[in-house]
Image 1 (tube, rainbow, N blue to C red):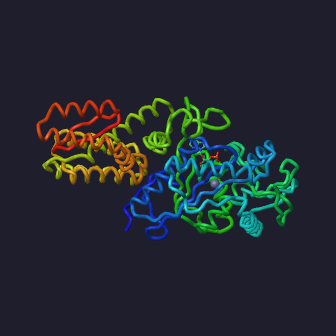
Image 2: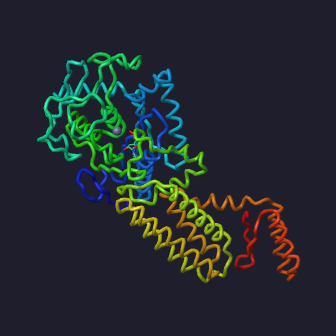
Image 3: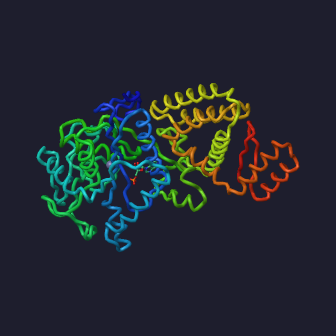
Length: 474
Ligand code: AMP
Ligand code: ZN
């Protein structure tokens, strides 16, 4: 049986114990990227949060089916493909490829399915047909199809919209709008010249789907009419998620989603990082400045997902420094060769740290507190190493605890650190081994000569308890 976990459910506006529909299984839908450009690291805060969620559920013992859509047709994809004179598919393929590359660099575990909107037009048409049957959809003078929000009394329950102020009969064709312009929204947009050759037939004439219907149709197809968790950045809550609820619950006459989780924004100098403000960095921008996906992920992990996170280069510097300390500790642990007098303390410390880590993560993904548990183990491990009583087995308990953390953190990279440390040229290894022999024979002059020679070749040799050695690049 899976462990108990709790989440802040935006719908309930409080932390609730999570109960899955099917025992130990979770259906999760996450709104994916609109593929008209490279995603920026603000977008990746949302995808990283969703990755943390999946990984935490798996750590708790759930089997997770994550579905993330690709919005490959909307106002922006059409506009920018035309600017470049490229067919829509060819244009979006470039950014879909880049998106997957970036996900891998940020160690974001792939979803089970990445349905593309343009490959699910039939499902969307079918869903709109159902909404017609049930009296929620209507065709307007502009030939587009709209959802009549006054027919759906629960409209506004997610975003807490004041229904008194809803303006009857007002329609909005654009996909994104603010709460004060709440209105009937487009399900199917009638073709106009601006759409060029991006067009599909439907019972209501030629056109293309609205953004919101994409997610309702694809979520239903892959996860069923009611599923466990739906996520996105906080800006997706309105109108996008509100509209999804109206469409799905209107058509299926059952609850759409049991738990809604939204992450706060990544900020730059007090403003949301966004394409429209121009204050964004893509992963590629940061890589060009010598930053790595590992460091960026480490920064994104440290702040609780419901808190705004201010992006700074200082934070990236600190991440580099922190990760270096972890690497160093892992390498030293792997070389431990003490008498084992500290092993039981290490085992106990590791078990306690894992417990603290899990209880923080299972409590609404409290990465800030989990991060404290990780740091505290680093501190303890360094103390135990300094006392020189750790054997390989004792050190192994500690290394395994860091490996457990990394099931969620995915950037501590215990084994990569050990491998990098092992990639020392064989002649250097041979000299270090010869130096150990020299020391055994109390040939201090030879030992010093070998140390200097190793140093002149760019490595430093350190003695470790128990007569072993450790090599590091200078
Ligand atoms: P979009 O491509 O604009 O639909 O955004 C994709 C995802 O990124 C959505 O879940 C947004 O809510 C999220 N998002 C956009 N900007 C930010 C930001 N600055 N911080 C966190 N999430 C964001
Ligand atoms: Zn969506």
